[in-house]
Image 1: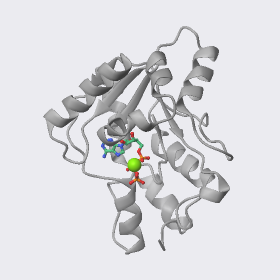
Image 2: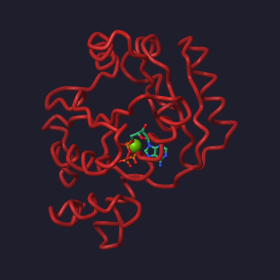
Image 3: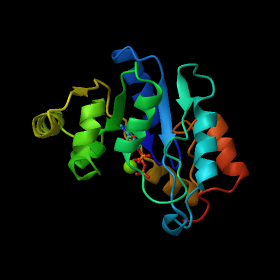
Image 4: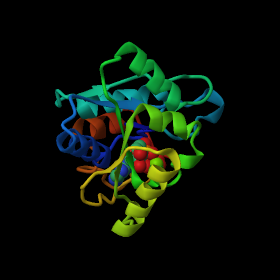
Length: 196
Ligand code: ATP
Ligand code: MG
């Protein structure tokens, strides 16, 4: 699962756990993407803070793993290249790329969607109260366009985003339970998202 994880929240964790369970995966890799210095948002968390929050959030789950595969400080993240590298290293492993519906809807605009589809199974979950039929339509479209193996995750809509958490934190509102306790503590101790 790729993402900015700024910060990682229970939506990400439940997404990973559901995929693990429904598709009988061995492990779930959380791959925070690096922000090139010129693109770093002024008041978000740094690359190392985002990676550390992932590490803290997944620490007690033996089949979750932090991967720094997409944590490049320079340039852009190309999932097609990440997959190529992972598959070269582990040729006997099948990869599933886990995403929310919002990512699936813009998937055709990613760099090299065909190469991505040739290298993995896509797993998509409902998000933002998207109607079931709209998610089905998005899945059908990616399947047809890229001859892709796209699977739907049957998970409940989890109405949470990193954006909301950053916003709440900056307003002094509680973010507890949307984010795991170690991550809440880390955000407080390091003064992250206090001003947006
Ligand atoms: P932001 O609000 O900053 O965009 P985000 O909550 O969307 O953050 P990302 O790091 O952008 O989190 O998301 C990483 C991946 O996790 C994406 O594929 C996204 O669709 C998925 N995802 C994030 N939150 C949820 C959620 N609540 N339900 C389902 N999928 C989610
Ligand atoms: Mg997002």
